[in-house]
Length: 142
Length: 464
Ligand code: HEM
Image (cartoon, rainbow over all chains, first blue to last red; front, side, top):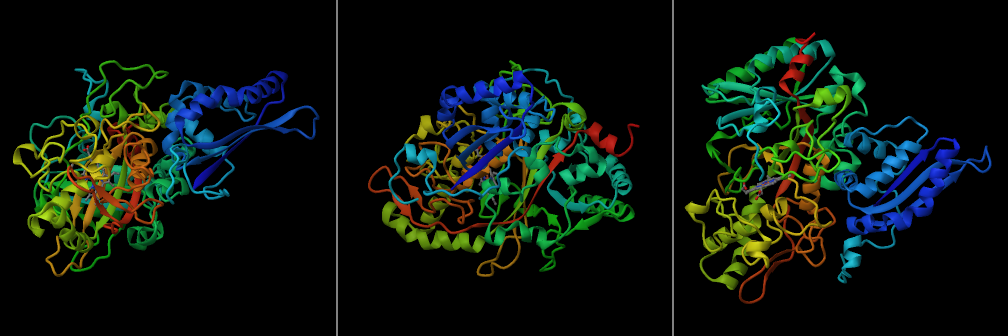
Protein backbone atom coordinates (compact mmCIF):
# COMPACT_ATOMS: atom_id res chain seq x y z
CA UNK A 1 0.00 0.00 0.00
CA UNK A 2 1.13 3.54 -0.67
CA UNK A 3 1.56 6.24 1.94
CA UNK A 4 0.32 9.83 1.87
CA UNK A 5 2.40 12.96 2.26
CA UNK A 6 0.53 16.24 2.55
CA UNK A 7 2.83 19.21 2.92
CA UNK A 8 0.89 22.25 4.08
CA UNK A 9 2.96 25.42 4.18
CA UNK A 10 1.40 28.80 5.02
CA UNK A 11 3.21 31.41 2.93
CA UNK A 12 4.13 35.08 3.19
CA UNK A 13 1.62 37.60 1.87
CA UNK A 14 3.99 39.94 0.02
CA UNK A 15 3.60 40.18 -3.75
CA UNK A 16 6.94 38.56 -4.63
CA UNK A 17 6.10 35.44 -2.63
CA UNK A 18 2.55 35.36 -4.00
CA UNK A 19 3.85 35.56 -7.58
CA UNK A 20 6.44 32.89 -6.88
CA UNK A 21 3.74 30.58 -5.55
CA UNK A 22 1.62 31.05 -8.70
CA UNK A 23 4.64 30.40 -10.92
CA UNK A 24 5.59 27.29 -8.94
CA UNK A 25 2.09 25.86 -9.37
CA UNK A 26 2.04 26.58 -13.08
CA UNK A 27 5.34 24.85 -13.80
CA UNK A 28 5.17 22.10 -11.17
CA UNK A 29 4.12 19.19 -13.39
CA UNK A 30 6.27 19.96 -16.41
CA UNK A 31 9.36 20.83 -14.36
CA UNK A 32 9.36 17.89 -11.99
CA UNK A 33 8.05 15.04 -14.13
CA UNK A 34 11.52 13.80 -15.15
CA UNK A 35 12.78 13.74 -11.56
CA UNK A 36 9.64 12.01 -10.24
CA UNK A 37 9.74 9.50 -13.10
CA UNK A 38 13.31 8.68 -12.23
CA UNK A 39 12.49 8.34 -8.54
CA UNK A 40 9.89 5.70 -9.43
CA UNK A 41 7.94 5.61 -6.17
CA UNK A 42 5.44 8.44 -6.46
CA UNK A 43 1.94 7.51 -7.69
CA UNK A 44 0.54 11.04 -7.85
CA UNK A 45 1.73 14.51 -6.91
CA UNK A 46 -0.29 17.71 -6.84
CA UNK A 47 0.67 21.27 -6.10
CA UNK A 48 -2.33 23.20 -4.79
CA UNK A 49 -2.71 26.82 -3.73
CA UNK A 50 -5.02 27.41 -0.77
CA UNK A 51 -6.93 30.72 -1.05
CA UNK A 52 -6.83 33.22 1.77
CA UNK A 53 -10.55 33.80 2.39
CA UNK A 54 -9.84 36.77 4.65
CA UNK A 55 -7.98 38.62 1.87
CA UNK A 56 -9.53 37.87 -1.52
CA UNK A 57 -6.99 37.27 -4.27
CA UNK A 58 -4.25 36.24 -1.89
CA UNK A 59 -2.88 32.76 -1.35
CA UNK A 60 -2.78 31.54 2.22
CA UNK A 61 -0.76 28.39 1.84
CA UNK A 62 0.84 25.92 -0.52
CA UNK A 63 -0.16 22.31 -0.33
CA UNK A 64 1.86 19.55 -1.99
CA UNK A 65 0.02 16.24 -1.92
CA UNK A 66 1.62 12.99 -2.94
CA UNK A 67 1.10 9.29 -2.49
CA UNK A 68 4.19 7.15 -2.71
CA UNK A 69 5.43 3.63 -2.03
CA UNK A 70 7.17 2.66 1.19
CA UNK A 71 8.63 4.72 4.00
CA UNK A 72 9.41 8.44 3.65
CA UNK A 73 12.62 9.14 5.51
CA UNK A 74 14.96 6.57 3.90
CA UNK A 75 14.26 8.06 0.47
CA UNK A 76 14.35 11.76 1.32
CA UNK A 77 18.09 11.88 0.64
CA UNK A 78 17.29 10.95 -2.96
CA UNK A 79 15.17 14.10 -3.17
CA UNK A 80 17.86 16.19 -1.51
CA UNK A 81 20.56 14.78 -3.80
CA UNK A 82 18.53 15.56 -6.92
CA UNK A 83 19.29 19.20 -7.78
CA UNK A 84 15.87 19.78 -9.41
CA UNK A 85 13.91 18.38 -6.48
CA UNK A 86 16.11 20.11 -3.92
CA UNK A 87 15.24 23.34 -5.66
CA UNK A 88 11.48 22.75 -5.19
CA UNK A 89 11.87 22.36 -1.47
CA UNK A 90 14.33 25.21 -1.08
CA UNK A 91 11.76 27.35 -2.92
CA UNK A 92 8.97 26.20 -0.61
CA UNK A 93 11.03 26.92 2.48
CA UNK A 94 11.78 30.41 1.19
CA UNK A 95 8.09 31.16 0.72
CA UNK A 96 7.09 29.80 4.13
CA UNK A 97 5.56 32.20 6.62
CA UNK A 98 7.41 30.59 9.48
CA UNK A 99 11.03 31.63 9.20
CA UNK A 100 12.59 28.51 7.73
CA UNK A 101 16.15 28.41 6.58
CA UNK A 102 17.29 24.96 5.62
CA UNK A 103 21.01 24.83 6.25
CA UNK A 104 21.63 21.11 5.99
CA UNK A 105 19.93 17.84 5.13
CA UNK A 106 18.71 17.31 8.70
CA UNK A 107 16.94 20.67 8.49
CA UNK A 108 15.33 19.57 5.22
CA UNK A 109 14.18 16.24 6.67
CA UNK A 110 12.66 17.96 9.68
CA UNK A 111 11.01 20.59 7.46
CA UNK A 112 9.24 17.85 5.49
CA UNK A 113 8.17 15.87 8.55
CA UNK A 114 7.01 18.88 10.55
CA UNK A 115 4.86 20.23 7.71
CA UNK A 116 3.37 16.88 6.75
CA UNK A 117 -0.29 16.76 7.81
CA UNK A 118 -0.79 13.10 6.87
CA UNK A 119 -0.14 10.02 8.95
CA UNK A 120 0.94 6.63 7.63
CA UNK A 121 -2.16 4.59 6.81
CA UNK A 122 -4.43 7.59 6.15
CA UNK A 123 -4.92 6.83 2.47
CA UNK A 124 -7.51 5.02 0.43
CA UNK A 125 -6.06 3.06 -2.45
CA UNK A 126 -8.06 0.97 -4.92
CA UNK A 127 -5.12 -1.33 -5.71
CA UNK A 128 -2.10 -2.65 -3.87
CA UNK A 129 0.55 -2.44 -6.57
CA UNK A 130 3.60 -0.22 -6.34
CA UNK A 131 4.63 2.20 -9.08
CA UNK A 132 7.45 -0.12 -10.09
CA UNK A 133 5.06 -3.07 -10.33
CA UNK A 134 2.52 -1.10 -12.34
CA UNK A 135 5.15 0.16 -14.77
CA UNK A 136 6.57 -3.33 -15.17
CA UNK A 137 3.03 -4.60 -15.74
CA UNK A 138 3.26 -7.21 -13.01
CA UNK A 139 0.26 -9.46 -13.51
CA UNK A 140 0.09 -11.97 -10.71
CA UNK A 141 -1.66 -11.05 -7.46
CA UNK A 142 0.78 -9.41 -5.04
CA UNK B 1 37.12 2.30 -2.40
CA UNK B 2 38.91 5.63 -2.62
CA UNK B 3 41.82 6.54 -0.43
CA UNK B 4 43.46 9.52 1.16
CA UNK B 5 46.43 9.37 3.51
CA UNK B 6 45.20 11.83 6.12
CA UNK B 7 41.54 11.93 7.02
CA UNK B 8 40.43 15.21 8.59
CA UNK B 9 39.02 13.63 11.75
CA UNK B 10 41.08 12.83 14.84
CA UNK B 11 40.81 9.14 15.79
CA UNK B 12 41.25 10.13 19.42
CA UNK B 13 38.02 12.13 19.22
CA UNK B 14 36.01 9.20 17.83
CA UNK B 15 34.72 6.33 19.97
CA UNK B 16 36.71 3.18 19.28
CA UNK B 17 33.95 0.75 18.33
CA UNK B 18 33.07 2.90 15.32
CA UNK B 19 36.35 2.66 13.50
CA UNK B 20 37.79 -0.57 14.94
CA UNK B 21 36.39 -4.06 15.14
CA UNK B 22 37.36 -5.04 18.68
CA UNK B 23 38.60 -8.58 19.12
CA UNK B 24 37.91 -8.66 22.87
CA UNK B 25 36.11 -11.95 23.42
CA UNK B 26 33.82 -10.80 26.22
CA UNK B 27 31.25 -8.05 26.07
CA UNK B 28 28.08 -6.91 27.83
CA UNK B 29 25.67 -4.28 26.48
CA UNK B 30 23.90 -2.50 29.32
CA UNK B 31 20.73 -0.40 28.95
CA UNK B 32 19.94 2.50 31.28
CA UNK B 33 17.35 5.15 32.08
CA UNK B 34 18.43 8.48 33.56
CA UNK B 35 16.38 10.10 36.33
CA UNK B 36 17.75 13.64 36.04
CA UNK B 37 20.50 15.65 34.44
CA UNK B 38 22.77 15.82 37.49
CA UNK B 39 22.73 12.04 37.94
CA UNK B 40 23.27 11.47 34.21
CA UNK B 41 26.23 13.87 34.20
CA UNK B 42 27.87 12.18 37.17
CA UNK B 43 27.24 8.74 35.68
CA UNK B 44 28.97 9.65 32.39
CA UNK B 45 31.81 11.29 34.32
CA UNK B 46 32.35 8.12 36.33
CA UNK B 47 32.57 6.06 33.13
CA UNK B 48 34.77 8.47 31.20
CA UNK B 49 38.14 7.00 32.27
CA UNK B 50 37.14 3.69 30.67
CA UNK B 51 35.84 5.05 27.36
CA UNK B 52 38.02 3.82 24.51
CA UNK B 53 38.73 6.10 21.57
CA UNK B 54 39.76 4.98 18.09
CA UNK B 55 43.36 6.02 18.69
CA UNK B 56 45.85 3.20 18.13
CA UNK B 57 46.75 1.42 21.38
CA UNK B 58 50.21 0.14 22.23
CA UNK B 59 48.87 -2.32 24.80
CA UNK B 60 45.46 -3.76 24.22
CA UNK B 61 43.23 -2.48 27.06
CA UNK B 62 42.07 -5.32 29.29
CA UNK B 63 38.70 -3.68 29.78
CA UNK B 64 37.07 -0.69 28.15
CA UNK B 65 33.70 0.67 27.11
CA UNK B 66 31.80 2.86 24.71
CA UNK B 67 28.68 4.92 25.31
CA UNK B 68 25.60 5.56 23.18
CA UNK B 69 22.71 7.95 23.88
CA UNK B 70 19.19 7.72 22.51
CA UNK B 71 17.48 11.00 21.63
CA UNK B 72 15.72 10.96 25.03
CA UNK B 73 19.18 10.54 26.52
CA UNK B 74 20.51 13.51 24.52
CA UNK B 75 17.55 15.62 25.70
CA UNK B 76 18.49 14.89 29.32
CA UNK B 77 21.63 16.94 28.72
CA UNK B 78 20.41 19.30 26.01
CA UNK B 79 16.65 19.90 26.27
CA UNK B 80 16.88 22.56 23.54
CA UNK B 81 17.82 20.06 20.83
CA UNK B 82 14.24 19.11 19.90
CA UNK B 83 13.70 19.19 16.10
CA UNK B 84 17.42 19.56 15.44
CA UNK B 85 18.36 15.91 14.94
CA UNK B 86 17.24 13.59 12.14
CA UNK B 87 13.53 12.83 12.38
CA UNK B 88 13.93 9.05 12.72
CA UNK B 89 16.46 9.44 15.57
CA UNK B 90 14.11 11.76 17.43
CA UNK B 91 10.98 9.72 16.75
CA UNK B 92 12.58 6.36 17.56
CA UNK B 93 12.51 2.98 15.81
CA UNK B 94 8.95 2.26 16.98
CA UNK B 95 7.61 5.32 15.09
CA UNK B 96 5.17 4.77 12.24
CA UNK B 97 7.62 5.81 9.53
CA UNK B 98 10.49 3.66 10.85
CA UNK B 99 8.10 0.73 11.14
CA UNK B 100 7.37 1.05 7.40
CA UNK B 101 10.92 -0.29 6.98
CA UNK B 102 11.37 -2.48 10.06
CA UNK B 103 7.94 -4.17 10.07
CA UNK B 104 8.03 -5.35 13.67
CA UNK B 105 4.68 -7.05 13.95
CA UNK B 106 3.35 -10.04 15.91
CA UNK B 107 5.90 -11.26 18.49
CA UNK B 108 8.31 -8.52 17.33
CA UNK B 109 5.84 -5.74 18.25
CA UNK B 110 7.58 -2.71 19.83
CA UNK B 111 5.08 -2.95 22.72
CA UNK B 112 6.90 -6.03 23.98
CA UNK B 113 10.46 -4.87 23.27
CA UNK B 114 13.02 -5.10 26.07
CA UNK B 115 11.01 -7.70 27.92
CA UNK B 116 7.96 -5.42 27.84
CA UNK B 117 9.57 -2.83 30.13
CA UNK B 118 7.77 0.49 30.36
CA UNK B 119 11.05 2.36 30.89
CA UNK B 120 12.56 4.42 28.07
CA UNK B 121 16.14 3.58 27.10
CA UNK B 122 18.36 6.66 27.48
CA UNK B 123 21.82 5.21 27.34
CA UNK B 124 23.58 2.00 26.24
CA UNK B 125 26.99 1.17 27.66
CA UNK B 126 28.98 -1.35 25.59
CA UNK B 127 31.48 -2.98 27.95
CA UNK B 128 34.36 -5.11 26.63
CA UNK B 129 36.91 -7.35 28.39
CA UNK B 130 39.83 -9.53 27.34
CA UNK B 131 38.79 -12.03 30.00
CA UNK B 132 35.52 -12.84 31.73
CA UNK B 133 36.97 -11.38 34.96
CA UNK B 134 38.01 -8.12 33.29
CA UNK B 135 34.53 -7.76 31.82
CA UNK B 136 32.87 -8.65 35.12
CA UNK B 137 34.82 -6.06 37.07
CA UNK B 138 33.97 -3.25 34.65
CA UNK B 139 30.31 -4.28 34.52
CA UNK B 140 30.30 -4.00 38.33
CA UNK B 141 31.90 -0.54 38.14
CA UNK B 142 29.28 0.62 35.63
CA UNK B 143 26.49 -0.83 37.70
CA UNK B 144 27.73 0.88 40.86
CA UNK B 145 28.09 4.20 39.06
CA UNK B 146 24.46 3.81 37.96
CA UNK B 147 23.31 2.96 41.48
CA UNK B 148 24.88 6.04 43.03
CA UNK B 149 23.49 8.37 40.38
CA UNK B 150 19.82 7.38 40.20
CA UNK B 151 20.41 5.75 36.82
CA UNK B 152 18.31 2.59 36.57
CA UNK B 153 19.33 -0.43 34.58
CA UNK B 154 16.86 -2.12 32.24
CA UNK B 155 17.13 -5.88 31.97
CA UNK B 156 16.20 -6.39 28.32
CA UNK B 157 15.77 -10.17 28.42
CA UNK B 158 13.72 -12.48 30.63
CA UNK B 159 16.16 -13.59 33.34
CA UNK B 160 15.61 -17.32 32.85
CA UNK B 161 17.69 -20.51 32.94
CA UNK B 162 20.33 -18.93 35.16
CA UNK B 163 20.87 -15.98 32.76
CA UNK B 164 21.13 -12.45 34.14
CA UNK B 165 18.66 -10.77 31.78
CA UNK B 166 21.55 -8.63 30.52
CA UNK B 167 22.82 -8.74 26.95
CA UNK B 168 25.99 -10.73 27.41
CA UNK B 169 28.06 -11.97 24.50
CA UNK B 170 28.26 -15.74 24.26
CA UNK B 171 32.05 -15.91 23.92
CA UNK B 172 32.63 -19.56 22.96
CA UNK B 173 31.10 -19.00 19.52
CA UNK B 174 34.05 -16.69 18.68
CA UNK B 175 33.53 -15.49 15.08
CA UNK B 176 30.41 -17.58 14.54
CA UNK B 177 26.77 -16.78 15.27
CA UNK B 178 23.70 -18.90 15.92
CA UNK B 179 22.47 -20.87 12.90
CA UNK B 180 26.16 -21.81 12.57
CA UNK B 181 27.53 -19.15 10.23
CA UNK B 182 30.78 -17.24 10.37
CA UNK B 183 29.95 -13.53 10.74
CA UNK B 184 31.57 -10.13 10.53
CA UNK B 185 33.36 -10.86 7.26
CA UNK B 186 32.40 -7.99 5.03
CA UNK B 187 32.50 -4.49 6.51
CA UNK B 188 33.01 -1.08 4.88
CA UNK B 189 36.65 -0.11 4.27
CA UNK B 190 36.26 3.26 6.09
CA UNK B 191 38.80 4.98 3.86
CA UNK B 192 38.61 8.72 3.24
CA UNK B 193 37.50 9.95 -0.18
CA UNK B 194 40.46 11.16 -2.22
CA UNK B 195 38.30 13.78 -3.85
CA UNK B 196 36.22 15.30 -1.07
CA UNK B 197 33.21 16.54 -2.97
CA UNK B 198 31.63 19.87 -2.27
CA UNK B 199 28.33 19.64 -0.35
CA UNK B 200 26.31 20.70 -3.40
CA UNK B 201 27.65 17.77 -5.41
CA UNK B 202 27.91 15.05 -2.82
CA UNK B 203 27.64 11.89 -4.89
CA UNK B 204 31.36 11.41 -5.03
CA UNK B 205 32.46 9.14 -2.23
CA UNK B 206 32.38 5.36 -2.02
CA UNK B 207 29.51 4.22 0.25
CA UNK B 208 32.09 2.42 2.41
CA UNK B 209 34.14 5.57 3.08
CA UNK B 210 34.24 6.94 6.62
CA UNK B 211 32.55 10.25 5.74
CA UNK B 212 29.33 8.25 5.33
CA UNK B 213 29.53 7.15 8.94
CA UNK B 214 30.96 10.07 10.90
CA UNK B 215 28.71 13.08 11.33
CA UNK B 216 29.93 16.44 10.14
CA UNK B 217 31.96 15.87 6.96
CA UNK B 218 31.08 16.74 3.35
CA UNK B 219 30.76 14.44 0.39
CA UNK B 220 28.30 11.82 1.65
CA UNK B 221 25.23 10.88 -0.34
CA UNK B 222 23.65 9.72 2.90
CA UNK B 223 24.01 13.11 4.58
CA UNK B 224 24.94 12.28 8.18
CA UNK B 225 23.61 15.08 10.34
CA UNK B 226 23.00 17.47 11.94
CA UNK B 227 25.85 19.41 10.39
CA UNK B 228 25.11 22.93 11.57
CA UNK B 229 24.43 24.89 14.74
CA UNK B 230 24.97 23.74 18.32
CA UNK B 231 23.41 20.37 17.57
CA UNK B 232 25.89 19.99 14.70
CA UNK B 233 28.81 20.61 17.06
CA UNK B 234 27.36 18.14 19.57
CA UNK B 235 27.01 15.44 16.89
CA UNK B 236 30.28 16.01 15.01
CA UNK B 237 32.57 12.96 14.94
CA UNK B 238 29.70 10.89 16.30
CA UNK B 239 28.06 7.96 14.55
CA UNK B 240 24.59 6.43 14.93
CA UNK B 241 24.03 2.92 16.21
CA UNK B 242 20.91 1.00 15.24
CA UNK B 243 21.05 -1.33 18.22
CA UNK B 244 18.77 -4.23 17.43
CA UNK B 245 18.49 -7.42 19.42
CA UNK B 246 17.22 -10.32 17.35
CA UNK B 247 16.14 -13.65 18.80
CA UNK B 248 17.11 -16.51 16.50
CA UNK B 249 14.70 -19.43 16.36
CA UNK B 250 17.20 -22.25 15.87
CA UNK B 251 14.43 -24.84 16.19
CA UNK B 252 12.52 -23.33 13.24
CA UNK B 253 15.76 -23.00 11.28
CA UNK B 254 16.91 -26.61 11.81
CA UNK B 255 13.40 -27.86 11.15
CA UNK B 256 13.22 -25.93 7.89
CA UNK B 257 16.55 -27.33 6.70
CA UNK B 258 15.47 -30.88 7.63
CA UNK B 259 12.02 -30.55 6.03
CA UNK B 260 13.36 -29.09 2.78
CA UNK B 261 16.41 -31.37 2.42
CA UNK B 262 14.53 -34.18 0.57
CA UNK B 263 13.38 -31.70 -2.10
CA UNK B 264 16.98 -30.54 -2.51
CA UNK B 265 18.28 -34.11 -2.71
CA UNK B 266 15.76 -34.78 -5.48
CA UNK B 267 17.23 -31.86 -7.43
CA UNK B 268 20.98 -32.17 -6.76
CA UNK B 269 21.45 -35.72 -5.41
CA UNK B 270 23.81 -36.51 -2.54
CA UNK B 271 22.94 -36.95 1.12
CA UNK B 272 20.41 -35.03 3.22
CA UNK B 273 23.28 -33.77 5.40
CA UNK B 274 24.89 -32.21 2.34
CA UNK B 275 21.52 -30.83 1.20
CA UNK B 276 21.06 -29.06 4.54
CA UNK B 277 24.46 -27.35 4.26
CA UNK B 278 23.76 -26.42 0.64
CA UNK B 279 20.42 -24.89 1.57
CA UNK B 280 21.93 -23.01 4.54
CA UNK B 281 24.48 -21.52 2.12
CA UNK B 282 21.75 -20.53 -0.36
CA UNK B 283 19.82 -18.67 2.38
CA UNK B 284 22.81 -16.45 3.21
CA UNK B 285 24.95 -16.42 0.05
CA UNK B 286 27.92 -17.81 1.97
CA UNK B 287 28.66 -21.30 3.22
CA UNK B 288 28.67 -21.59 6.98
CA UNK B 289 32.50 -21.34 7.00
CA UNK B 290 32.19 -17.97 5.22
CA UNK B 291 33.03 -18.93 1.61
CA UNK B 292 30.89 -16.81 -0.73
CA UNK B 293 28.78 -18.82 -3.18
CA UNK B 294 29.87 -16.56 -6.01
CA UNK B 295 33.48 -17.71 -5.56
CA UNK B 296 32.88 -21.21 -4.19
CA UNK B 297 29.59 -22.36 -5.71
CA UNK B 298 29.99 -26.09 -5.14
CA UNK B 299 31.57 -26.48 -1.73
CA UNK B 300 33.02 -24.43 1.13
CA UNK B 301 36.70 -23.68 0.72
CA UNK B 302 39.01 -22.46 3.48
CA UNK B 303 40.86 -20.32 0.94
CA UNK B 304 37.76 -18.21 0.20
CA UNK B 305 36.21 -18.07 3.67
CA UNK B 306 37.11 -14.41 4.25
CA UNK B 307 36.87 -13.22 0.65
CA UNK B 308 34.94 -10.07 -0.18
CA UNK B 309 36.23 -9.30 -3.68
CA UNK B 310 33.39 -10.43 -5.90
CA UNK B 311 30.41 -8.89 -7.61
CA UNK B 312 26.92 -10.16 -8.32
CA UNK B 313 25.77 -8.72 -11.63
CA UNK B 314 29.17 -9.23 -13.25
CA UNK B 315 30.00 -12.64 -11.77
CA UNK B 316 26.57 -14.22 -11.21
CA UNK B 317 24.01 -12.19 -13.14
CA UNK B 318 21.50 -15.07 -13.37
CA UNK B 319 21.86 -15.96 -9.70
CA UNK B 320 22.92 -19.52 -10.58
CA UNK B 321 25.40 -19.42 -7.70
CA UNK B 322 23.90 -17.06 -5.14
CA UNK B 323 20.09 -16.64 -5.10
CA UNK B 324 18.87 -13.06 -5.42
CA UNK B 325 17.13 -13.14 -2.05
CA UNK B 326 20.06 -14.62 -0.13
CA UNK B 327 20.72 -12.46 2.95
CA UNK B 328 24.14 -11.17 1.80
CA UNK B 329 22.85 -10.38 -1.69
CA UNK B 330 20.00 -8.32 -0.25
CA UNK B 331 21.96 -6.52 2.47
CA UNK B 332 24.77 -5.62 0.07
CA UNK B 333 23.70 -6.07 -3.57
CA UNK B 334 27.08 -4.66 -4.67
CA UNK B 335 26.96 -3.94 -8.42
CA UNK B 336 23.29 -4.73 -9.09
CA UNK B 337 21.41 -1.99 -10.90
CA UNK B 338 19.41 -0.07 -8.32
CA UNK B 339 16.01 1.58 -8.48
CA UNK B 340 16.19 4.50 -8.97
CA UNK B 341 19.19 3.97 -11.25
CA UNK B 342 22.39 5.47 -10.05
CA UNK B 343 21.54 5.47 -6.35
CA UNK B 344 24.31 3.99 -4.21
CA UNK B 345 24.00 0.87 -2.06
CA UNK B 346 24.05 1.87 1.61
CA UNK B 347 26.60 0.11 3.79
CA UNK B 348 26.56 -0.58 7.53
CA UNK B 349 29.42 -1.16 9.95
CA UNK B 350 28.48 -4.36 11.75
CA UNK B 351 29.82 -4.85 15.27
CA UNK B 352 27.23 -7.34 16.53
CA UNK B 353 27.88 -10.40 18.68
CA UNK B 354 25.87 -13.50 19.61
CA UNK B 355 24.13 -13.92 22.96
CA UNK B 356 22.80 -17.06 24.67
CA UNK B 357 24.17 -20.59 24.49
CA UNK B 358 23.44 -22.70 21.42
CA UNK B 359 20.74 -25.34 21.91
CA UNK B 360 21.50 -28.97 22.56
CA UNK B 361 18.92 -30.65 20.30
CA UNK B 362 16.33 -31.92 20.85
CA UNK B 363 16.15 -29.26 23.61
CA UNK B 364 15.81 -25.93 21.83
CA UNK B 365 14.42 -23.94 24.74
CA UNK B 366 16.27 -20.86 25.93
CA UNK B 367 16.97 -17.35 24.76
CA UNK B 368 19.63 -16.79 22.09
CA UNK B 369 20.30 -14.55 19.12
CA UNK B 370 22.24 -11.57 17.86
CA UNK B 371 23.08 -8.38 19.73
CA UNK B 372 22.96 -6.38 16.51
CA UNK B 373 25.12 -3.26 16.38
CA UNK B 374 24.61 -1.58 13.01
CA UNK B 375 26.58 1.64 12.74
CA UNK B 376 25.74 4.31 10.21
CA UNK B 377 25.81 8.04 9.60
CA UNK B 378 22.12 8.16 8.66
CA UNK B 379 19.66 5.82 10.36
CA UNK B 380 17.01 6.30 7.67
CA UNK B 381 19.09 6.49 4.48
CA UNK B 382 21.37 3.59 5.44
CA UNK B 383 19.93 1.28 8.14
CA UNK B 384 16.21 1.69 7.46
CA UNK B 385 16.62 1.68 3.70
CA UNK B 386 18.46 -1.66 3.87
CA UNK B 387 15.91 -3.00 6.31
CA UNK B 388 13.06 -2.11 3.99
CA UNK B 389 14.87 -4.07 1.25
CA UNK B 390 15.18 -7.02 3.63
CA UNK B 391 11.43 -7.03 4.15
CA UNK B 392 10.61 -6.42 0.48
CA UNK B 393 13.27 -6.84 -2.26
CA UNK B 394 11.95 -3.93 -4.32
CA UNK B 395 15.25 -2.14 -4.88
CA UNK B 396 16.40 -3.68 -8.15
CA UNK B 397 14.57 -4.96 -11.19
CA UNK B 398 16.90 -7.98 -11.26
CA UNK B 399 15.44 -9.46 -8.08
CA UNK B 400 12.01 -10.85 -8.79
CA UNK B 401 9.35 -10.31 -11.40
CA UNK B 402 6.92 -9.09 -8.75
CA UNK B 403 9.50 -6.88 -7.00
CA UNK B 404 8.39 -8.19 -3.63
CA UNK B 405 10.36 -11.26 -2.59
CA UNK B 406 11.98 -11.10 0.85
CA UNK B 407 15.39 -11.67 2.46
CA UNK B 408 15.49 -15.45 2.87
CA UNK B 409 16.85 -15.34 6.42
CA UNK B 410 15.68 -12.17 8.10
CA UNK B 411 12.46 -10.72 6.78
CA UNK B 412 9.38 -10.40 8.88
CA UNK B 413 7.08 -12.71 6.98
CA UNK B 414 4.16 -10.54 8.10
CA UNK B 415 5.39 -7.71 5.84
CA UNK B 416 3.65 -7.29 2.51
CA UNK B 417 6.17 -9.41 0.66
CA UNK B 418 6.23 -12.68 -1.25
CA UNK B 419 7.40 -15.41 1.17
CA UNK B 420 8.63 -17.71 -1.57
CA UNK B 421 12.30 -18.42 -2.21
CA UNK B 422 13.66 -19.39 -5.62
CA UNK B 423 16.99 -21.12 -6.12
CA UNK B 424 17.99 -21.00 -9.79
CA UNK B 425 19.64 -24.19 -11.08
CA UNK B 426 22.11 -24.49 -13.99
CA UNK B 427 20.19 -27.50 -15.32
CA UNK B 428 16.50 -28.21 -14.85
CA UNK B 429 13.80 -26.26 -13.07
CA UNK B 430 14.58 -23.86 -10.28
CA UNK B 431 13.93 -25.05 -6.73
CA UNK B 432 10.98 -23.04 -5.45
CA UNK B 433 10.21 -22.97 -1.74
CA UNK B 434 6.70 -21.65 -1.47
CA UNK B 435 6.70 -20.17 2.00
CA UNK B 436 9.73 -19.45 4.14
CA UNK B 437 9.16 -19.62 7.91
CA UNK B 438 9.91 -16.85 10.40
CA UNK B 439 13.44 -17.38 11.74
CA UNK B 440 13.92 -14.11 13.65
CA UNK B 441 12.02 -12.17 16.34
CA UNK B 442 12.92 -8.62 17.35
CA UNK B 443 13.54 -8.33 21.10
CA UNK B 444 14.13 -4.58 21.00
CA UNK B 445 15.63 -1.71 19.03
CA UNK B 446 17.20 1.55 20.17
CA UNK B 447 18.62 4.30 18.00
CA UNK B 448 21.70 5.78 19.68
CA UNK B 449 24.27 8.41 18.91
CA UNK B 450 27.81 7.35 19.82
CA UNK B 451 29.03 10.88 20.54
CA UNK B 452 32.59 12.10 20.10
CA UNK B 453 35.00 11.96 23.02
CA UNK B 454 34.79 15.75 23.30
CA UNK B 455 30.98 15.67 23.48
CA UNK B 456 31.17 12.99 26.17
CA UNK B 457 33.53 15.21 28.16
CA UNK B 458 31.12 18.08 27.62
CA UNK B 459 28.07 16.24 28.95
CA UNK B 460 30.17 14.95 31.84
CA UNK B 461 30.67 18.60 32.79
CA UNK B 462 34.40 18.55 32.13
CA UNK B 463 34.62 21.26 29.48
CA UNK B 464 33.02 24.15 31.39
C1 HEM C 1 20.07 -12.65 13.54
C2 HEM C 1 20.12 -11.95 12.48
C3 HEM C 1 21.21 -12.02 11.44
C4 HEM C 1 21.96 -13.08 11.05
C5 HEM C 1 21.90 -14.52 11.56
C6 HEM C 1 22.87 -12.59 10.02
C7 HEM C 1 23.80 -13.37 9.36
C8 HEM C 1 24.70 -12.90 8.45
C9 HEM C 1 25.72 -13.69 7.82
C10 HEM C 1 25.99 -15.16 8.10
C11 HEM C 1 26.39 -12.89 6.95
C12 HEM C 1 27.57 -13.28 6.04
C13 HEM C 1 28.88 -13.09 6.68
C14 HEM C 1 29.47 -11.72 6.56
O1 HEM C 1 29.55 -11.14 5.47
O2 HEM C 1 29.85 -11.20 7.62
C15 HEM C 1 25.80 -11.58 7.03
C16 HEM C 1 26.20 -10.48 6.30
C17 HEM C 1 25.59 -9.25 6.37
N1 HEM C 1 24.49 -8.90 7.11
FE1 HEM C 1 23.53 -10.10 8.41
N2 HEM C 1 22.62 -11.26 9.80
C18 HEM C 1 21.62 -10.87 10.65
C19 HEM C 1 21.07 -9.61 10.74
C20 HEM C 1 21.35 -8.57 9.91
C21 HEM C 1 20.64 -7.31 9.87
C22 HEM C 1 19.47 -6.95 10.76
C23 HEM C 1 21.23 -6.56 8.91
C24 HEM C 1 20.90 -5.18 8.41
C25 HEM C 1 20.18 -4.32 8.93
C26 HEM C 1 22.31 -7.33 8.35
C27 HEM C 1 23.17 -6.87 7.39
C28 HEM C 1 24.20 -7.60 6.87
C29 HEM C 1 25.18 -7.05 5.94
C30 HEM C 1 25.23 -5.60 5.43
C31 HEM C 1 26.04 -8.08 5.63
C32 HEM C 1 27.26 -8.01 4.70
C33 HEM C 1 26.91 -8.36 3.31
C34 HEM C 1 28.10 -8.11 2.39
O3 HEM C 1 28.71 -7.05 2.48
O4 HEM C 1 28.37 -8.99 1.57
N3 HEM C 1 22.34 -8.53 8.96
N4 HEM C 1 24.77 -11.60 7.94
